[in-house]
Image (cartoon, rainbow, N blue to C red; front, side, top):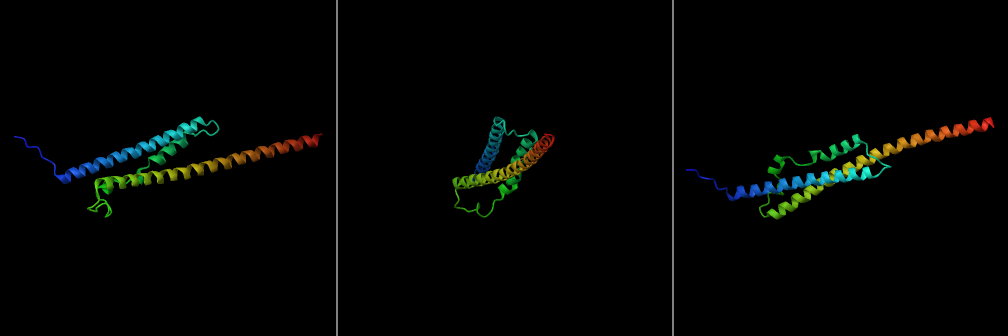
Length: 148
């Protein structure tokens, strides 16, 4: 005869917790991917500011960086804040959701700083090219003035 093991109440709670955390992780990944797709689409629509393929890859790498997300072991051994006996599952889910939003905010703030840095570098290069062009044109004007 086979006896199936009936999970205890504690095991059921852990299973629910893990399912919610997995769902939030998937949601966080999907939000990041959707935002990346939106950035890519916007940049492709802007003829004046195309995003170079390498830069887009770097942007994806920065967003997909999982250093911001707690590891599985961190999720299993939560801090004293999470171990409050009076915290309900809904309260835990709300707290985890807020933590996910905070991680997304931090990631996209870093991405924004990186984009601003890249744009500043591009602006400096364009300014150098512009200065070279104006210098060349000024020299051409002086040359023609000296001839006539």
